[in-house]
Image 1 (cartoon, rainbow, N blue to C red):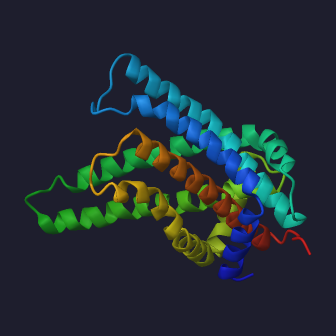
Image 2 (cartoon, helix red, strand yellow):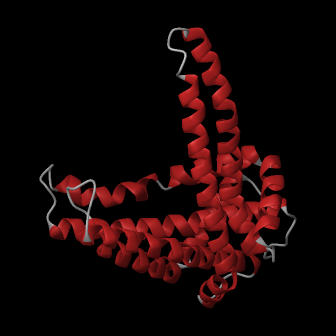
Length: 260
């Protein structure tokens, strides 16, 4: 299955799954509305505002795997026997929620460790200020492990959730298989990500229309709410599109059956 065939299938599946898109958009809209009072001019909120931000972050942390699990399960179901019912979203979300939550926690730890590694290595590379050549050499050496970490993280983040949804795999088994499949399909995975992102550009620009119409004037409450609604819809559409696309690629490379 070619890259554009996968992209086309993703868009057709999303067009037939407006109920799923609408449900996810509603959840994101509610979260966005909850965040509005917490968005202020103070870059370092304190007191009740800081507690509100922390509470919202925790809610999103525990809610994201549920939404992602629903989208992935729906994508997997619609690729096996379309059109998939909305129940495949809710049932799948419950079925793989704990595994995706564990994967999200592992991913967060991996990102933090990679960030610390990058700071330490590039910090050490900048120490020999009196020897520019040595600094450049150390920077190149520092970039190697960081680049490798980003490469592995990209494969894991894109293909492990589809592996969990498409097969009854535990988290570490899914990571292992996603790395195996991802290494063999790296070019197609990157091309698919780019192609789908390009088709989403018009949708991504839509939420900016109310602000552009304002002509640079500070947006009012109505404009802010309209932009938030549009952003929620685009975010939900993007999540479902990438879920269908990545599950397709995973099923293709894992030699799993498709709908006929």
